[in-house]
Length: 290
Ligand code: 2HA
Ligand code: ZN
Image 1: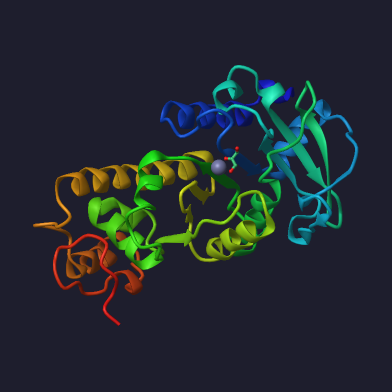
Image 2: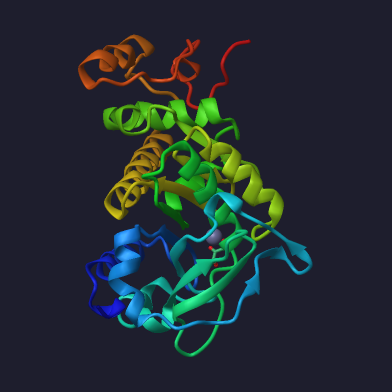
């Protein structure tokens, strides 16, 4: 089967345009990767070519290896490509890559018709996908975008996973159910490099969402719907928090730790207690009392 005719590429492209329509992908912002299933590779293999093997580098001269992903195939967005254009022309904006048996070289087997490279965040995506595969072999999607409300909050909330998560949790009941392990925070660090990639992968060992201060967010999922839905949920909650903060720095009413704990049994979850600290009053953004 042709890659362009596959349900898989249609779903990938749909996620890209959905993200663009949310306003999360100005210009060439954001990137999306998907670790393919064996049956998907087999179905599309006839449409693959054999590109040149290339090193995987965080930066020039800084080679990386991802042995946990050896031999795997991925769909990844292209460096400098616009999410807006993916649905229009997937073959020019996206590629499928194969990793070698050591996990330290990749080759493009499909796409980037007019030339180009996978996203500048490729090593960060692979570092995350490697950690996620070890956590759960069904984890396949890593998504990065620039959602305005999440980014705005990184200027006014303490850059502390506990505070950020708790404030986001309080805005929409669904949040604690959808991501009970909360949100990890990466302080401002230059993007595209090893440090930010490794810090994000460290978060993904336990959590499904990582916020990059003053830049954007990363999330993961077993499929496109779950990854997109997760980002959508966090950003919706962030939007409500921005509205609340624009009215008042103090909440009159909210969801309390006791109310959050009531969700555990009926929803079959365990909301991480790190986030259910007591607060002295309704002021938004207060740190746990140590
Ligand atoms: O331009 O979003 O973080 C792609 C990015 C880099
Ligand atoms: Zn970015």
